[in-house]
Image 1 (cartoon, helix red, strand yellow):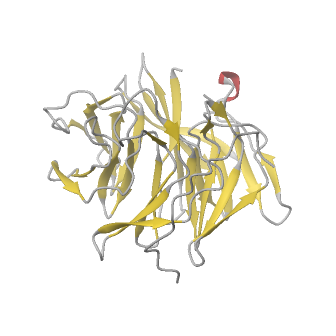
Image 2: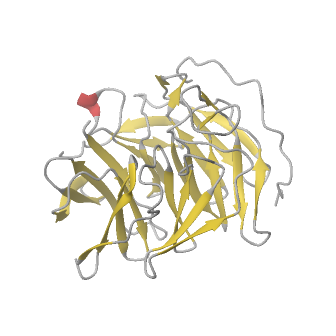
Length: 306
């Protein structure tokens, strides 16, 4: 059902959960599922934003932004935020309504090099996880309108190269890489740890661990479920797919993708789990796969044009 990987037997205890290369592609979060966007980065040229026309199964370029050398995209309100995960002080803000580009102040002037952090939108702000080289339990929160950076409560387990998303009023963080002292170093290992931020309690709650420890996976949500797909498992790309039921705090393994993918762009769109780009084979970076739950199969869609 998935690619071969050794399991992490050091399962995180499940406490406090209320049960009720140059070219990179990333999808943006879309609350209404009215439109699917993908972002293609070219280090030497520009950023291209592609819009998916589901009726035709086609991708078209809707924005071409003259900014280069950036590697991540996050949407907060009407803003597309482009930032470099290897150099977190570099951020560009693109207003999709006015098409105006502005350069924001450095995220953190006294730390010019951030590496392997995760950025995601939550409560109309940008959350940066694993971004502090001195303590990767720290979580930073950035308001793109006021351009102010503050700190949120720390994670229970520090991590880098993790994946995060919002779901039903919580912010979930799954997998990543950890070290013995929760500090950034070269002897990090994959983790299956999962936790969520509860804004009402203003703290992080531990959740059931992933079935497979992994880092740089894709993550999407639909209703009561959260999906984690692909990623790196002991430095090996995996096609393993897991689904988390937030009501019963349990992970279930699903049918594996056709192609292993590392940090794939992942979203639940048109009632199907959609995974784009970032395969383990550079030649397949334009691939798009959809999971059809009625047939329990992954199907290939038309490739992205670039």
